[in-house]
Image (cartoon, rainbow, N blue to C red; front, side, top):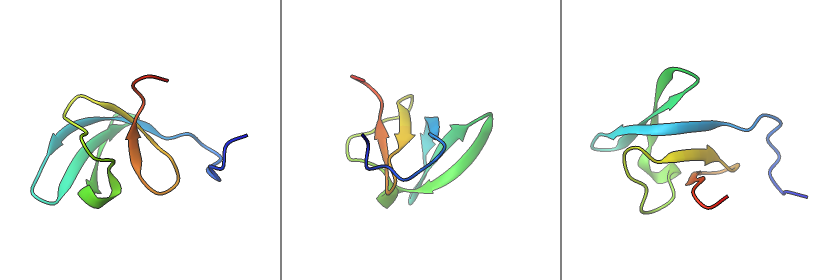
Length: 61
């Protein structure tokens, strides 16, 4: 069983990066996310999911 306490799994696509944020499209809306909330090495176009304290790539699931 997962340690993730979230009831709803959040997934999005990284659309672009700004100086301190990444714009992630979630359910059709672009949301600014601080870069410190992202796993390292993510790039524009990556599909990501929220794992309780940061966004990480879903590649390889």
